[in-house]
Image (cartoon, rainbow, N blue to C red; front, top):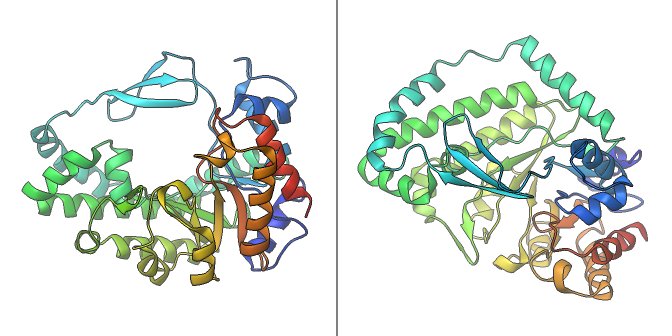
Amino acid sequence: MKESAALVRQACAGKRPARTPIYDILANDAVIGHFAGRPLDGSDDLGALCLAIGRGLDATRFLLAPSADGAVSKDRFGNTFMHQRWTCWVSDHVRKELEDWVRWLPGEIARLETEAPVTPAARAAARQEQAELLQRLNGSVYIACTPSTAINEAMFGYHCGLEILSYLWADEPDLVLRWFRAIEAAQQRYIGRTAHADQAALAVIYSDVAFKGRLMFSLDLFRAWGFFDDVARICAACHQNGLQVIFHSDGYIMDLLPDLVAAGIDGLNPIEKAAGMDIYEIRRRYPQLILAGGVDVSHLLPFGTPAEVRRETRRMINETGAEGRLLIGSSTEVGNDVPLANYLAFRDEVFAG
């Protein structure tokens, strides 16, 4: 939307804009079809998605086009993925046993450690790609700089997973730490290529490190791995490039928040109510944080009534966005289980001011 960038800037600066900006990921056929004015029929689904975002959202960080049910693909490491409409999963890991990882990792670490620095040409190409995408989104903000913490990249980028990572740490701690440091350096290069404040003055750190009600790891283990130092370096690099940083993790991360704030994060996403996160308590404790998301998509948006959706949306705007710093949206993404009527009730309430 034409006014989106200005609304997002005002909100992130701590000024309540004319209306609260909407920040989300769309993975919903009915919602996308409604705003695009045409269905997702496989002819140009990315084009339809861009139209829907440009008409329905003020900011997003991920363009997720649907896949054909049963489609199969491989990632750059050789893992096989099975696709089903709006989701996919690893159906066959190329490295299945701990020993496979212990043999493979030294070469991958050496590759990361010898990667060339970011060139001005690569940085310019990334900026141009962002500019072209923003043009397709009709003024809506696309957050292109989305670095991962080393823990997140190991588990979900490499698809090492929680179990293998735990065994690696028990048997090969020095190898794990060297891997993490190599990933961190690669992510710093990624920031150097993709951080362009004139295109979008926000970055999102990907770091899913929690379950419902608890963290995946102890605070002592986070510190042993250098997790908070990693977050601090990411924040510093993004800040140097003029970007504010929103930290993303599903699950319950209240026990991490004091250290994350000390590391320099500017905001938090997605604030998952079903996992025990309370956006109102977070606003009271951390009035300086940009809160992105917050509207319960586990229960309220799929199963509530339009009136209930409107009521919670209004409360959230009034109680957490009175001084800006709110990018309202779902507590992860708008999936196909959200009825169009409920999404429109949410959006209409936001546009009511």
